[in-house]
Structure formats: C-alpha cells, structure tokens
Figure 1 (cartoon, rainbow, N blue to C red):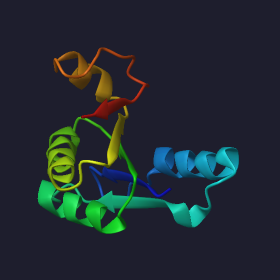
Figure 2: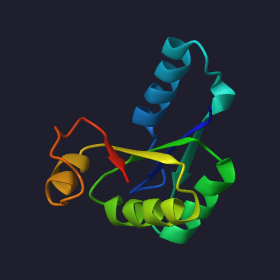
Figure 3: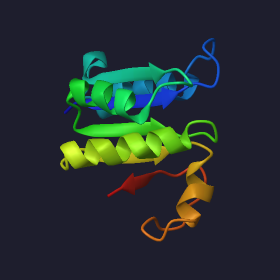
Figure 4: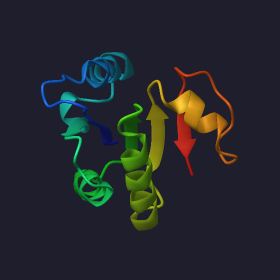
Amino acid sequence: MKICLATAHQKPQFIPLSLLYLKASLVERTGGLSPDDVTILEFGRDATAIEIAERVLAVDADILGLSCYVWNIRALMAAARHIKDRRRSTTIILGGPEVGPMAASRPECPPVPAHAGVRHR
C-alpha cells in the first residue's frame, strides 16, 4: 500500500510537523509500512489545483491524506476533485482544522469533530 500526505503552506519556511508525525506513526504502528511507502508532498501557496493533482497522481498512492487549513482548503478540494476524476480508486482523507467547518457546510460530508478526517467521495 502506498500513502501520500500533502499540504500547501502559507509561507515557505513552514515545516509540515503534522504530516511528519503522521508518517512516523503510520510506519511505527502499522508494522507493514516502510518509510518509502509514505510520501510527503509540500506545495507553495501559489500552487494550482492542477499542479497539486498532477504531483499527487505521479506518486500513484492508494490513500491520499490532505492537511487542510483556511489558506489551502479551496486549492486542495479542487485538487481532490481532479484526482478523483482521474483515479476513482484513490481514497482521499481530509484532516486539519478546516475540515470541521468545511464538512458541516457540505451535504455530502457528514458533520465530524475538527480533528477527525472525512473521506472525499
């Protein structure tokens, strides 16, 4: 199984600590994943949804985790739609502080706590 964790930063000097911790936890606790099975992709604030989708698709991951914040939610949701259009089999999981408010406003996403993930279908 291949997993891709991705985010778009507000500032270039940001470090994706949440994605690094998640990768470490996945590798340590699953027993079946190696560090090479989990790819972290970082994008700048100006990255387009198409650029994000193309790089994610190049990883050929089974599962995509997107770290969503107020400054990147629109681009990441648009990228998720492009990815699903091209590869329906990819499971997309949204996480981060913007997921709760975003999910509550979308009828296809059930309401969840802000720290929980929502699979984009």
